[in-house]
Image 1 (spheres, rainbow, N blue to C red):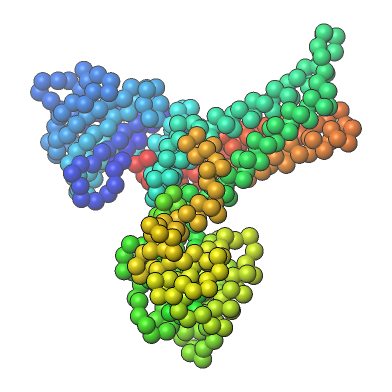
Image 2 (cartoon, rainbow, N blue to C red):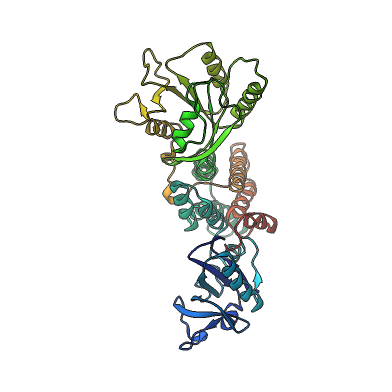
Length: 456
């Protein structure tokens, strides 16, 4: 394949930048860029870092470190040259332009990783995980993506696929070779094997909404309540920054204020909303309408109530919360340092201003984190193994495979022969192949890699 080049490090001012070149002519391009009076470029060994001057049309433009990675022992599976030069927009672009003039083509977004996929250095789920690892905003997200780049999810999908294909082969071999001394797989045996496969697929499918999606993308969370319950104070506490104005005047927050924060193993996409109440204020009512719309969009609702001022407005907030379907709810009774009398156990007692909770020695932040752990039960999934779906595309293919398995089981229970059920099993195997192998269409592959940065 043609040689491609790109800046692999983030653009901007920095100590160094890395220019990556990959392809059949990568080392020929390196010959034109490298100069060291004591060493020829062709004599640089694999994975060895060698200092040299960087040339453009024979003139020295910078100096840096050259590292050669020989195919197939490289990231892309091709010959790869990486040049570490001085950082900064001008110098890194200058070195890149030298590589392009020496014969390389500018890489497309994600093209290096796409070549790794084409050359079987990464599975499709592993390639998707590379993108997730680069964009990870939390330790949990980075660990999960890292496990998937090492093939954790791919191995699980492969294991399930192998089980399906084994059943198919045992069913069809008996039909194709009736004269041989082979034992046919009974309906009962086939159903028992499919029950195991179905359970694995169900757990994988559930992992998307219950773990993978919330780890990869974060949890959209609306903070709601009437005015002056401490919603903005809570937002500032969670964000560890003064991003919202806090004042005693009711209706201070009129528009939605958003912030992405990490709390323990969770990433929260927070939306601090206008206080909901009955009012004649035109502008405030616009903010309240936005708050109600955001509540419908979010999967997690944090209701904030003030222990020193409970009234009919709070009942309206509870009514809004109770009408939510298939959403996680956290009820916070704020200002517990002022008043904690006769508070229902449904509420977590906190003081957002003081970062304390009603439990001795437990901060408000820790109390909220503990509640998130109870709601989402991430420990149900082995995150360290990487066996969790993180992409909607993966979820769709696993769901299709499960539907085909269920169809095969229904056929067997209705009395159809195993070879008829085998047709559905073939569809299930195809879905799994599309999930993690070369069977996926070129259009899907292109869509996956176009979201990568250019140097990856």
